[in-house]
Length: 236
Image (cartoon, rainbow, N blue to C red; front, side):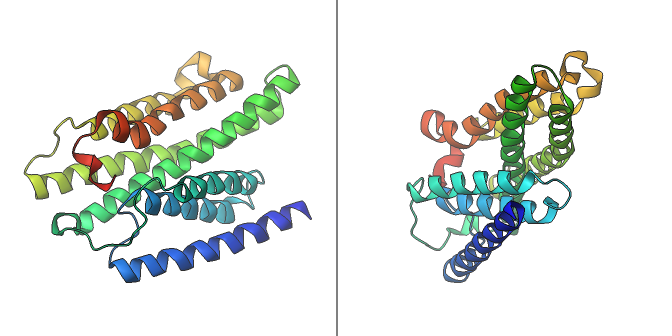
């Protein structure tokens, strides 16, 4: 019954967000990823979709999806960026840019779910007083999702560099945002090789690593804009 309630809540929230994003797309004439508020809404939409798709296989995906999507919508509601729907300047109307941002937001959505999953796994591990079956299972779920998260992050960085070359004549400029995206990718790439790193084979250690790794995502998305600036701050 609880699971059914979670599915219904997810479906209702997903339908509402889908309607809102379609309206923004129609009015603005672009994929709703042009500013912080729109990207937060898209992240919430992506996480809810993942919860609906993978919830049958991983029962914890549904509550995790509700938590992450609610947090994303809270950030959007707090006015993380100008909520006005406006037309994009010509240089931002490239399909490559839409693909780049979509891939980056998809990867961040997956990494956010992994963070919640790892936090749960860490709490369960503390309750069990050892790396028990539940904690190990949650670590396996994080590992499964991590492959997708790292793949989409790498794809987003590559498509972003191609778009940068088309628009600015340079594949890589060591801009703070792109530099930290690369740092984030390298950090999570370490976790991908968990089987080759003895200490990460322990579920509790792995959960802690994944929690700390998400700090790089937060800094890449929020910290760079507020502290370092750069070319990627135009969407503010």
